[in-house]
Amino acid sequence: MDQLIIAGKSYSSRLLVGTGKYKDFEQTRTAVEASGAQIVTVAIRRTNIGQNPNEPSLLDALPPSRYTILPNTAGCYTAQDAVRTLRLARELLDGHALVKLEVLGDPRTLYPNVVETLSAAETLVKEGFQVMVYTSDDPIIAKRLEEIGCVAVMPLASLIGSGMGILNPYNLQIIIENAKLPVLVDAGVGTASDAAIAMELGCDGVLMNTAIAAAKDPVRMASAMRKAVEAGREAYLAGRMPKKLYSASPSSPTSGAIAPIQNKVA
Amino acid sequence: MISLTINGTARRFDDPLTVAELLERLDLSGKRIALERNGEIVPRGSFREQRLADGDKLEVVVAVGGG
Image (cartoon, rainbow over all chains, first blue to last red; front, side, top):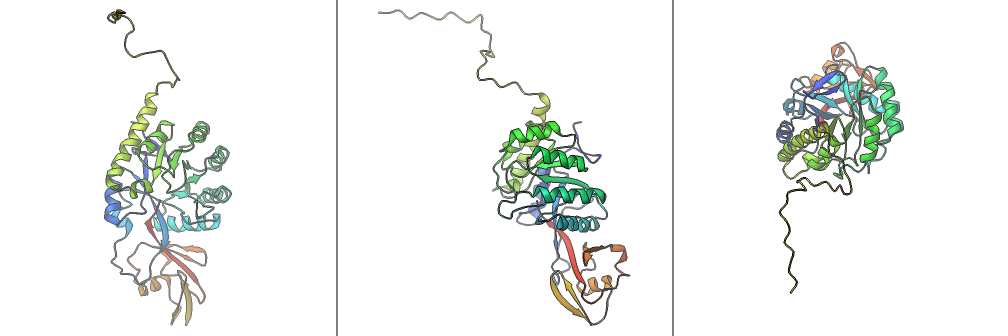
């Protein structure tokens, strides 16, 4: 069966989803379930002191026994903060080493700071983390992150939360051609066809959050995304027909058609 | 009397308590948390031994929804 392999572990789903921006944990849970995702990202934040101790928590709705929980470094603008966050995350998740690294450069566009990202990746790999790294669509940076020892490269397709879709198919193609690691689109997917396009380009997977959570019917969109990722992957494996401006190659036979009647001129 | 900064907020405690005792006082004992003390991770296994000192800066974190 066609499996996604990350850091030596196999997954049947190539759709990874975030857990932010949902109405409540119940919606989060049902949407994640409808998506079929096995890997879900979470953020690491200060706990509210003095809150009701019986307050339900995210990991009650999405237990680590059932899902691969992927802590991220959302909100980190320096390598140092990203590293600190993931050290905390690893402790929080009982030594779990698979993490998502993202170091942002600008709170408005949320574009990644690849200089800080490279630095954080080097430190984290040395400390034994298995780093799935969010990055720009720069093929040189993507290759460098692979050389550093990350376990997956995750270029954006367009800006985080923008829903603009796959704006950079050619850069993604180059990254995919050069990569020995799995390449997952992370950021910019807005609707099902975007996810299918990413998979048709040859991506190994897609990570999305806003596309599902901000849909009018998130659970339905989660289901659509599941199908889109599967369809796109299958189309990729099937090997599409070539594109030509014109082909003079109809699908129906050219011989044996009934003779056209010539119109008599009055 | 010791003063600790916990998640950015200053709090005073009568005696130098252990991390475990602090978490009990804050009603966080049963919760899945991770803790950083002055920039270093405090492993869960050593919560009962590590005694906090005046001026310690603590970050206590949990997993929340995110992309």
